[in-house]
Image 1 (cartoon, rainbow, N blue to C red):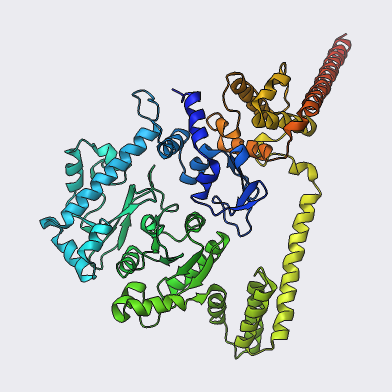
Image 2 (cartoon, rainbow, N blue to C red; image 1 turned 90 degrees about the vertical axis):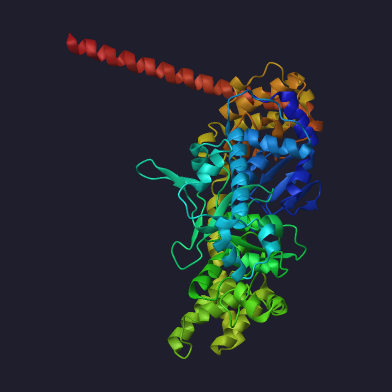
Length: 586
C-alpha cells in the first residue's frame, strides 16, 4: 500500500532541506545556495550544493542528489518508507498505517527492540550472580560503576542458550535472534547463543538505538573480541563506537582509538570525545561520519607496528573527509588506557595538545624505512618525501614540510624545493592530461553518469530537461504544456518524470524534486537532481516552453522519418532477397 500523496506533501512542506542537511554537514552560504563537503564521499574541496528554494541537494563530485527523503535514504542507508518514518518522527507527524503485513520498517523496528532487550539482559546479568567474573574483570580494568552504567556494559554467561531462553520467554523466537545476530546456527541446524562467557559492549547509533554488540574474553583465549555480524540495522563500516556520546562533546575534535576499552577509559577520565571503529580498519564511511560532527581528529592508536600501519591508513581517509588530522605518540605506554593509569589525566591532556601534525608523522615514519647514512637511500627518501609534500595544497605548507624533510636528510632547503617542485609539476601534468581528455568529449558531459540512463538524442533530451525544470519551479506552467506527454520524449527517464510531475500538478500536489523520491531509484534521482540543478528562469517560460516543445517534436519527427526510411530499406532488402531466390529457383 503506497503512502498517501497528501501525507508526503505535508511532510516535505514541514521539512526544510537546509535545516536537515545542516544537522550533518557544515554549510557555507554563497549567493542563494549553500555549499559544503559531501557526506557521501570523501573530498577536501566542497562540491555538495544545497538549494533551499528548490528543496534539493546535489553533489557535483559523486553525483548524488535529490530531496529530503533521498538525503535520509543515502545518509542512513534506509529504504524509502523507513526514511519517510525518520522524517515523520522529526516533523512530529504520525505515519499512516500500511496494513498488517510486516515490511522492512517493521522488521527493522523488531530487531532494534530485540537488541534493546538483549542489552538490558546482559547489563542485569553483569550485576547478578552469573556476572561476578565479568564484573570483577571490568573492575580490575579500573572501570567505575557509573561508567558501567553510562555505557550499558554487560555480561554473557558461559551457557549455550541462556539468551535464547530469556528472550524466548519475552515472545521472540529463534529466527528473530538469528536475524539480529544474537544467535548462530551450526551445520546440524542447532541454534545457540553467539556471545558466551564475555563482557558485553552494546553498540549504539547516533540516534540512541542499540544496533549490535561487541563481546570481549576475560583471559588470553581467542578471538579476543567477537562482534555482531552485519544485520539490517548494523553495519560495522558505517558506525563508530561511542559516537552517540562524543557527538555532543564541546572539545571540537575527536580522539580515535583502536578499541572499546581505550575509548571507555578516556571517557571515564573526562575525554568525552573519544570513539573507536568497530572491529575493522577505518573506512571512508567512518571518515565521512566523523567529519559530520568534528573538524579535527587526533589518532591515538597503539604504538606498536600494527598501530602505526593503522594510523598510516587512517590519515588519508580522514583528510579526504575534510578533517584536520594529528597523531598522538605515547612514550612509556602502549595505549591510552595504560598511559592514563600510569601518568594520569593531566599528562594525557598535555600529550593531546602536543599531538604531531600528520605530515611530520608521515615523514618520520617514511624516514624509518631508509638508512640516511647511505647516499642512495638518502636520495630515495627525499624523492618519496617530495611526492608526499607535493600533494599538500598550499605553497607555504610545501615549503615548511619540504624544509623538515631536508633537515632530516641533511640537505639544503633549496635542493629539496627543487625536488618538490619537480614532483608537483608531474602531478599538474597528469591532472592536465586528464582534464584535456574530458574536454575532448563535451557531449559526454551532458550525458547521465549511469550508462543505463544515457540519452539517445542529446538535443531533444536538453529540451526535455528544460520542461522538467520549469514544472519543478512552477506547477502552474503545466497548463502551457497541455498536449505534451512523456511518450514524445527521447529519454524514457525524462518522459516518466514529466508524466509524474504533470499528474501531480493536475492534482494540486507539489512538483518539487523531493516529491519524486518514491517513484524513482536512487540512480535516477541522482540524475534528476543534476537536471534540476541547472539554471532555468520562470520569467522566460513564455518563450522557453514553445521552443522546448518545438525542439522535442522536431527531433521526434526526425526519428520517425529515420525509422520509416530504415523500414523501407529493410523491406527493399527483403524484396531483393526474395526476388534473387525466385530467379535462382527458375
